[in-house]
Length: 196
Image: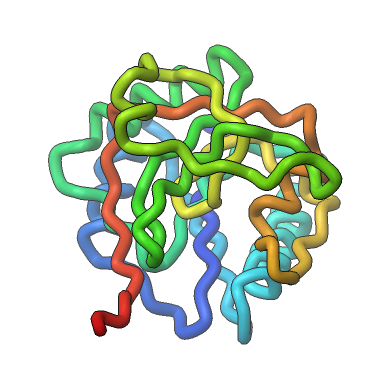
């Protein structure tokens, strides 16, 4: 049996972007792997992620760290990027290295972070657009949000919330996980921004 492409979507209202779901169908078709959606609904994102992890523990009891594509419900996969996403997934598995896509957060900063030091280290620093322009495809990055991230997810993990963010804590708690930027994958972010 072919391993499924596990797509983990945390949400507070069971909504997702329709073009994103259609693009994922094309990705699974090109990979010749069935899609397995794990959708976690809860009052906040860390709880939603924990609902997803419980679903995955139940579905894959013999696996402690399956490959999982975390995809936030407000991320847009644009039509025409199927080949780029497939290439990123195949590269990640071949190199046993997680991949992430960059997108702008609500405050306008890039989601990719240059340094990886934990809470006792210097404050983390987001890459600027100019810095990202100089990086090659699959360059290693320090940290990133989980809006679009494909890596071996430790299923025993418990996400927790504070002012830092549950995604940053995941990388701090698992420094063995390496992240590389799949530069060819372009995604959008439908985060609402209050304009003054």
